[in-house]
Image (tube, rainbow, N blue to C red; front, side):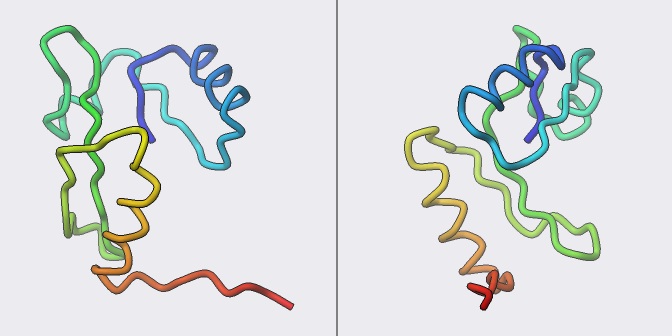
Length: 89
Protein backbone atom coordinates (compact mmCIF):
# COMPACT_ATOMS: atom_id res chain seq x y z
CA UNK A 1 0.00 0.00 0.00
CA UNK A 2 1.18 3.50 -0.79
CA UNK A 3 -0.19 6.72 0.62
CA UNK A 4 0.69 10.38 0.26
CA UNK A 5 0.13 10.75 4.02
CA UNK A 6 3.00 11.25 6.44
CA UNK A 7 4.74 8.28 8.08
CA UNK A 8 3.10 9.24 11.38
CA UNK A 9 -0.40 9.27 9.84
CA UNK A 10 0.27 5.93 8.13
CA UNK A 11 1.56 4.43 11.36
CA UNK A 12 -1.65 5.55 13.11
CA UNK A 13 -3.77 4.10 10.31
CA UNK A 14 -1.90 0.79 10.51
CA UNK A 15 -2.28 0.57 14.28
CA UNK A 16 -5.98 1.53 14.20
CA UNK A 17 -6.74 -1.06 11.51
CA UNK A 18 -4.33 -3.80 12.66
CA UNK A 19 -2.64 -3.66 9.25
CA UNK A 20 -0.35 -6.61 8.64
CA UNK A 21 1.32 -5.10 5.57
CA UNK A 22 3.78 -2.28 4.94
CA UNK A 23 2.59 1.19 3.95
CA UNK A 24 4.81 3.39 1.80
CA UNK A 25 4.66 7.05 2.80
CA UNK A 26 4.89 8.82 -0.55
CA UNK A 27 4.76 12.31 0.96
CA UNK A 28 6.01 14.12 -2.14
CA UNK A 29 3.83 12.00 -4.45
CA UNK A 30 6.74 10.89 -6.66
CA UNK A 31 5.79 7.19 -6.64
CA UNK A 32 2.10 7.97 -7.08
CA UNK A 33 2.91 10.21 -10.03
CA UNK A 34 5.03 7.49 -11.68
CA UNK A 35 2.14 5.04 -11.39
CA UNK A 36 -0.31 7.63 -12.75
CA UNK A 37 -2.48 7.72 -9.63
CA UNK A 38 -1.63 11.16 -8.24
CA UNK A 39 -4.78 13.27 -8.31
CA UNK A 40 -4.94 17.01 -8.82
CA UNK A 41 -5.43 17.42 -5.06
CA UNK A 42 -2.12 15.67 -4.38
CA UNK A 43 -3.68 12.48 -3.02
CA UNK A 44 -3.20 9.04 -4.51
CA UNK A 45 -6.20 7.41 -6.15
CA UNK A 46 -7.22 4.03 -4.75
CA UNK A 47 -6.00 1.68 -7.45
CA UNK A 48 -4.57 -1.79 -6.98
CA UNK A 49 -1.64 -2.89 -9.13
CA UNK A 50 -0.97 -6.62 -9.42
CA UNK A 51 2.72 -7.06 -10.11
CA UNK A 52 4.11 -10.50 -10.98
CA UNK A 53 7.41 -11.92 -9.70
CA UNK A 54 9.19 -10.54 -12.79
CA UNK A 55 8.01 -7.00 -12.00
CA UNK A 56 5.41 -6.92 -14.78
CA UNK A 57 2.07 -5.27 -14.01
CA UNK A 58 -0.43 -8.00 -14.87
CA UNK A 59 -3.62 -6.20 -13.82
CA UNK A 60 -4.79 -2.83 -12.55
CA UNK A 61 -8.00 -2.46 -10.57
CA UNK A 62 -9.14 1.16 -10.93
CA UNK A 63 -12.43 0.75 -9.08
CA UNK A 64 -11.28 -0.10 -5.55
CA UNK A 65 -14.00 0.01 -2.92
CA UNK A 66 -12.53 0.01 0.62
CA UNK A 67 -15.46 -2.07 1.89
CA UNK A 68 -14.86 -4.90 -0.58
CA UNK A 69 -11.16 -4.43 -1.41
CA UNK A 70 -10.04 -7.55 0.45
CA UNK A 71 -12.51 -9.78 -1.37
CA UNK A 72 -11.60 -8.23 -4.72
CA UNK A 73 -7.91 -8.69 -3.97
CA UNK A 74 -8.34 -12.41 -3.27
CA UNK A 75 -10.55 -12.88 -6.35
CA UNK A 76 -8.05 -11.11 -8.63
CA UNK A 77 -5.08 -13.02 -7.21
CA UNK A 78 -6.93 -16.31 -7.75
CA UNK A 79 -7.80 -15.33 -11.33
CA UNK A 80 -4.15 -14.47 -11.96
CA UNK A 81 -3.05 -17.86 -10.61
CA UNK A 82 -1.13 -16.50 -7.65
CA UNK A 83 0.06 -19.15 -5.20
CA UNK A 84 -1.98 -19.51 -2.04
CA UNK A 85 -0.62 -19.61 1.48
CA UNK A 86 -0.57 -23.00 3.12
CA UNK A 87 -2.48 -23.44 6.37
CA UNK A 88 0.59 -24.78 8.15
CA UNK A 89 0.82 -27.65 10.63
